[in-house]
Image 1 (tube, chains in turn red, cyan):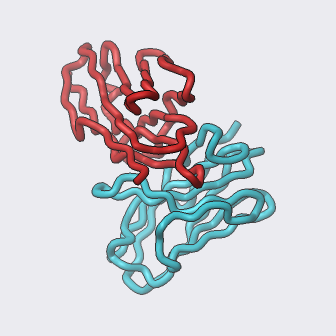
Image 2 (tube, rainbow over the protein chains, first blue to last red):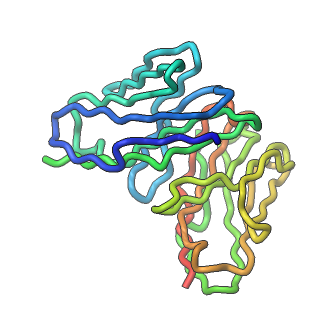
Length: 112
Length: 113
């Protein structure tokens, strides 16, 4: 069964600290993996899209990694800011029908 | 370039009623997808339209339907509303389809009483 699992479910960190969010998937065949940031009450915004051949991709203070062999991805946030408080959703495109499979997200709270 | 717009932003309905939500994609985007987001289930795919044709469909009952117009604008309809239909409904547009980056609208918050 095609699944995307994210951990932790929620995370609280202090402003200025780094954190890493995890995403494990069992989607096959794999097309690409995406990380989205969703602020409360708003639509998700794309952070990165990674294909099979990409190991690392950065977008400002956000760095995503992908290990296609172990089917794991991580999103690392450096020097967190209060505005990083949001849900982070991992999405894998693939499967026999080429669909998008969504993780349930990690809710990050950055405290001053 | 204007982003994806959704109307209305908030809606309150009662059980048994029906509702129509609207989505205007980014200019030039031909694919529009709809999602339901609830706290317990996260984002769940409803369906995708491309050039006025439904191309993909998720596992939702027939009460959920949609259509796309020649200008790529899309509508989603839910008939015989149930309490469990209360959710944030998001639409996303892409130039061609799932392989491309999706751009989400702000969503319509539907509350069913």
